Length: 270
Image 1 (cartoon, rainbow, N blue to C red):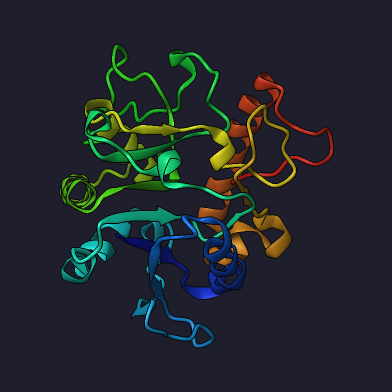
Image 2: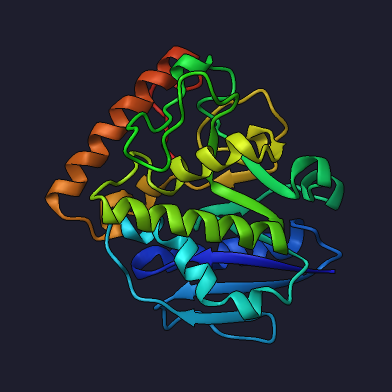
């Protein structure tokens, strides 16, 4: 069995690669053949027989995250040779062994994997930050949706995953044509897709932010980007997009305070 790992680290995000790769080799499906498809403009990442570098320049925020399905489909022929595909955010590291039965989905789970968001795992439906703009293809009606998924870890068997990518690419392109961008970008579109294709649900221990305390077995560590210069620095954002991100942080801080999931002086954001 071959596992394809999709990883995007353009610009300064290559700072996370070494820790991601070494910990994945040790803990993520350790007895399985893994291939890393690294979309990057970095000159410091070496290509091997299992590390496949795909040159990718920064697209600017939010396209760096919103257009990820387009990037994956550009390499559809190579990815189709894998049995399963998983995407991880750049700042993931692995701290405990993850075996096949924990992460590989079944037919009853639409052969897909989703990550329950560590902020939203015990919130009520009314508090989910779904897309509420009916002009967006990511829109979720008020009577739909049971879970809120994080965008930083998605996966599935190759056929189901690429089918999802094709669907989301089309939706994102349609939104662009209508001058619409979903509020949480790719994450909003992922949540809309999972309403009708409910996936295998990974608990928040698979998406464990640095500095948090969660009532789940910790499988990963999401490194705090603030310790690496912050989101704006890593993304190369302009002032306007930085302001938008500050607004988003305030929204999530409200949810974190409500959920009681933070250390008083040590909270961090994904």
